[in-house]
Image 1: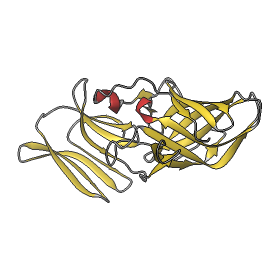
Image 2 (image 1 turned 120 degrees about the vertical axis):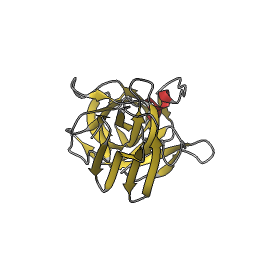
Image 3 (image 1 turned 90 degrees about the vertical axis):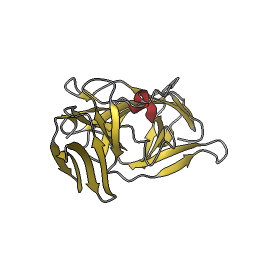
Image 4 (image 1 turned 90 degrees about the horizontal axis):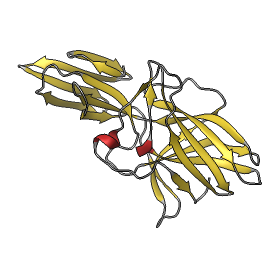
Length: 235
């Protein structure tokens, strides 16, 4: 489903239908699903449509750039140890129009449940998109239109064992890649204290054959100084 589509087309997936069809001399973009029907007139005939996975922080509006993934079971990691695990993450689906860059956003929707939470104290904490994930030792097979896979490297720089229950990431820095079967990204988490960690996102597709998706924050000319997150309120 992801990639460039020549109009007209009809795509059906997971209870939703996305189409661009000619009607009364115009092209009509239409999305039908559980939330109802969205329709838009497209007056630039012949432009291809791009359907791509995007950052999971655009719906219902730009509330926060942060994503918190809670693990279904805590991870215990020994002193001075670095390990790699796989966790899932939600993503949204962007629909764009253009023959060449820059792309214009037609629609953004998601098949994953949307939930938000607070990381840290009420006065100083971070509002985050919330997601709960199992922890896998090998790349898992997931629901590819609802959730992607994060290759997460965790390094414990402390002198003690640590218990890790969650990771907070800056979704505006996500480098999302996709192919026909999966949506992926990579991240790093450095444990620097019994309750604190530093996280960052990496430019690292799982294979050279994967395609890089669009970064919505750059399309909207949002300036970010860093993709780094300092977790000071518990891990």
